[in-house]
Length: 447
Ligand code: SF4
Image (cartoon, rainbow, N blue to C red):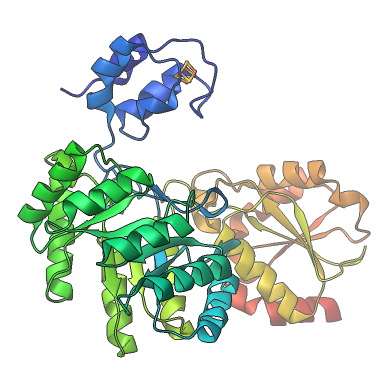
């Protein structure tokens, strides 16, 4: 039976020591009730609490960590089928595949590309998270050499893909302490691969042709004491993979079916770039925790990275920038002061347009809980009084000789209130769209 936050709180130590990562036992109890935390995060939980809370608070999809401490990737812990219900928690880890058939020179070149790949968007750095090494040769030595080269070259956690127990063990030895993900346990090798996962304390993919077979396989692995499992049901085509992913997620969340309560791994590979991107996008949306692609092409990775960022941004916590006055270009005492909200997308659009205009400016970013201009105004977070208070407290008045402030065209209605809040300032209503800022600023500068 599900326990309420209050029931859970009664069983916690109530010392509010904060070691679980939240400041109070009550806050931790609420997280446990929402299945957003694991009781093991509290080092002081009593045996009684472990017994009573343990099962009831266990996240329906286990959190699995992959890779070395300095490049650790966490997947799982999801609690909802659809993002709008609450939020998705751990974004899909994107992995790029390598083969031990590739010459070492080529591997070095490609690994450097993975390491250096970085797409900066709305203030976040989007990167490739993992690298998969396939034992295509079937031999031990080339596999180990490729694994070492890829791990060292990319600096990322590694997925080891091999059917051979000898090659797998040699690679696990080579990556001792780096928590590589073993791919994969099947019904045919479960004893030997399961034993390797236990011995090397490595997470492992369980792969089966059907959902039913997968449940039997994970039950066997759990009985062997293996907890960190990632699910794979390959499927004959993308539609079948999507269907399997959906069944796995539903079984975990709606039926609380423990044998399938793990994150999911999918592959999206092939020569046809459009199909690859379409398949990969589908899997990011539903419900890949790890996605392996075999390309580093810009036109494939760009849409995937952007889609992932959009889907995994918490809708209740929009990406925000720090509220303060930002110098754009090299503004002086005669440069204009513009004002907008701290919604990250708004900041980057507006600052980019100011920069492109060549007119240096002071850009005042108001605390507005990450909302866009109109939403913030409607919610009372972007009123004339609030902007006025911010400008006074920011210290910008001592940096500018001209008292002219430009507000977004969408909130022209706050101009009167702002004039009252900022005596001596001229309030100018700017354009509605950031794209029109360039000509507007040039015209203002010429006056
Ligand atoms: S670690 Fe345990 S005792 Fe400390 S605040 Fe968290 S729940 Fe309370």
